[in-house]
Structures are given as structure tokens and as C-alpha cells.
Amino acid sequence: MTRPRAATLSPQRFAGETVLGRKRRARRMARVLTETHPDAHCELDFSNPLELAVATILSAQTTDVRVNQVTPELFRRYRSAADYAAADRAEMEALLRPTGFFRAKTNSLIRLGQELIERHDGQIPGKLDDLVKLPGIGRKTANVVLGNAFGVPGITVDTHFRRLTNRFGWVDEQDEVKIEFLVADLIEKRDWTMLSHRVIFHGRRVCHARTPACGACTLASMCPSYGAGPTEAAPAAKLLKGPRARDLAVAAGVDPDLVPAAAVPILEEDAAADAPASVPEEA
Ligand code: SF4
Image (tube, helix red, strand yellow):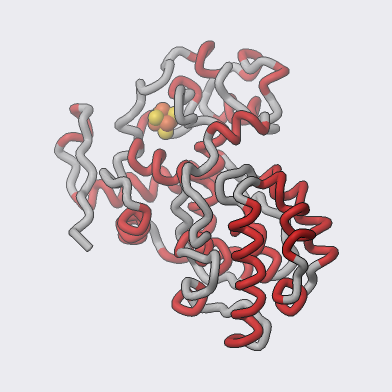
């Protein structure tokens, strides 16, 4: 692996930032994100490590909303690794069809069940090295499972996390594994899992891929990419999304009445536009 590149900050005031300065700024931004998104959480529905692993595999190339529509029936029919191992392929494909890549995902889930039976007594292992050897589970999925089902700190680098950490000037890097290691150097380990959720929430609600809401962003004073989207309050407030859009405006010092009432729900098609451009990790 070539050495990850440190971030290059274009605006004048961040140009001379030292490594220590970047770490301090990153931690300040992380604290502001904690206050900005108190509702941040894993948006996939699950009740045990197997369900979370399955839901995360299904989330490739689709939205969490779509996965959560499919998993209640899937989890009702397939309750254990043995159930997945013995699944009728056509039946499972029909269930998974709405999530896309349904043949590859069915293949991954059946093989996952088989491997869990053969090597792990039918249980999802709680170690990264074991998880990444399982069918359908790459480093990103493994970190989601570790962080949210086992309480082991993990950084989840998805499309939002990659975009935002580059905009934040924390990294100048597109490779997901390199980003994970660079951010691990900046942020305390105990905060890794929740930081991932908060950055992803910020990406879905404020710092959108096409037009970020810079003028209604709590990170504006610490972000070298401020100005990538509208900086005036009125147009920026119109870009805020989600059930807490008005609260987000207030937190950024913007009049909440500038947020259109209809802007509140995050539309699934908006989320789909931001969905990871990756195929299942090991299809
Ligand atoms: S200031 Fe703009 S680019 Fe920076 S985090 Fe906020 S919305 Fe994103």
C-alpha cells in the first residue's frame, strides 16, 4: 500500500495547517457533529449480529430504506446461519429482488450461512480478521458489524464518509482503506463508530454530493470547502433535509422558517442518488 496523502487545504486560512492543527480541528469538528446530529445511528434495522451482517450485505447499491423494507420478511423466514445455508435460491432471489444485484446477494447469503456453519459454529465472529474472510463481507461491512453489533470501535467509509472527509480537509484520498487509517489517526478510537454515523448523517442532511448547504452548516467556520455550495442563509436552508431540518438550521444560526416545510423527509430517490457506487463487496 502506498503511503496515504495528507490533505492539501486550498483556502488561505488552512494552508499552513500543521498535522497537530489538523488533528485538533478534526476533533473540534467531530464534537460539533455530535451536537449537530444527536439522532445519528445505524439506519439499518437489525436485532442481532447475523441480521446486521445480512442487512449490510444487502445495502450495497441501494438505500437503507429499501433494505429495511425487505428484511422483516427475510429475517422472519431465515433466522439462523443454517436457514441461510439451506435456502431455496429462487425463493430468496424473489425476496431480495427489490434491493438490486439480487442474484449476487443471494449467492453471498447462502455461502455466508454455509461458511458460518463450517467455521464458526453458526455464529458471526467478533473479529475483523475472521469477518473479512466471510462471503459478501469486506472491510466496510465488517466495521459496521463490529461497531454496531459488538461494540468494537470501527470506521465505516462509505460514499458519504469519503466525500465529507475530503471536503473537511481531513484527507486527500479516495481509497477507502487509506481513508479509514488516516481518520483513525485523527479521531480517538472510542469515537470511531459514532463518528461514522454522524458524518454519514451530515452527508445525507447537509453536505450533499451535488450542492452542499454551506450557509446552513454548523461546520462552516472549520471547513476548508466552505463555499462549495451556497453560503447565503436562504438558499442553503432550502437544501437541508430530514426530520430535524429546522433544528439543523437553528444549530447553524439560521432562521428555521427559511426551511421549506416540504423539505423535511429525506426522499428515497435523494438517498439513492447518494447511494454507494460500489457493487456488493464480494459478490
Ligand atoms: S461548510 Fe459546506 S462543504 Fe463544508 S461541511 Fe459544511 S456543507 Fe459541507
